[in-house]
Length: 502
Image (cartoon, rainbow, N blue to C red; front, side, top):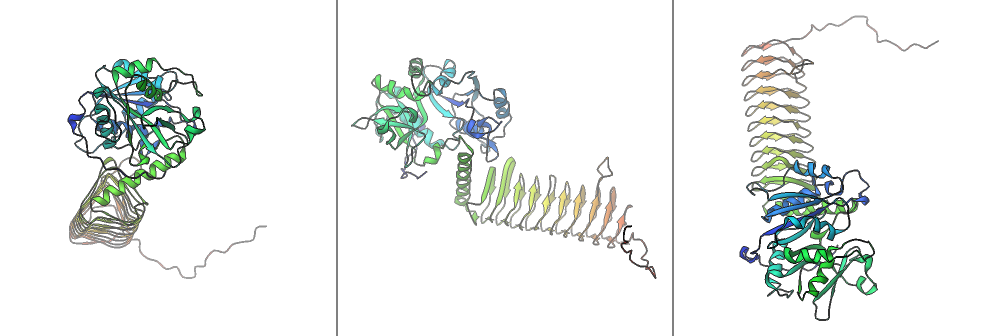
């Protein structure tokens, strides 16, 4: 989509919206074009269902209640969303009361909204959202609600009727195919919304489209919904027909044009889902850069969930920051090399993570050097000044300050003291086939390359383990411990040769 010129609006005062707000989210569509067994509203965007994004947005408006109209996928949709992770920032407060409304038979958007209306009080304002339109901004919806309340007075779109105003979210598109068109009279007043399947040549030439998002007083919306009829190409009850009914009641219909058309992008197929994913990435990257983060290529970064960053953080290409299961925290001066994945982890100030590292549920101190190709699994606690080399794996272990775990080593279920050197190719054998056992390595110990530490075992402070040793008993403090087979050279030995089969 080509972006419309951006208009700058001042945020409406909270007192502008006086009526309680009820939000209806339409989430009953089958989404056949997805070619998927998964209901459309459960398709993932940035690791979370489309509908979960919309419900987070709805909650941010602090409504009296949110009514979710579901149908295709039935209880699967409800169960998935009730268990979905939230993307709301910390301290966002409790979510609004949520009511699930089953639309057993899908007869159109007007029919869907009608299912929710009995639970909404007449004095409420009703905001209609869609479970497959995940990129709307809260500020846009606040403006739309204020516009409905004021009837458009003093705004670009004039209206009247005070709290009885109706407001539509529209957009001006270069290619409006697929959307309903906003039909206006010669004075510019909205007369009706015509769906594309019912539009003639003149209506199809209109570039102003209707997003489907609207705000209307519950008292009137109930009346209008009762007057809808399915005499159209789809044989459905169109919610958009309430615009013409409002005009018939001598109410002017106010409109707010989305400053960024990507806000109203509906997800109907895999291509549109990929477009939404790209837009989501762009927004998250922009937000990080506005907080002072350097991103080498904003088009090649994924940010999900809660991410907290300090000053002068640098992110190279193809970095993934996943804060869905818990926040990602990057301290001042952290540098992440290309292709790094950070999930639910904290990285201390001035730590450098080299290329192709994966960190899940890890806590890393300040001024560390990690990788390349290091994997930190849940429970990895890395103190300050630690060096982890190439192809190192740490699991459920504490690594003390200034210690080194060099390349090609595995450290699992281990407590490592400070100033320890663990040589290349060292393995803590923590699993006996049935149970996990712990290894303890004291301060300033030196573990030679190619060692096997068979847990449960303790290496004393200042102890040295000779390279190539297999340690099955505790090694005392300050002493050299070796556990090698005696080297033997066999005289006259010859390498076996292949024989010709008969």
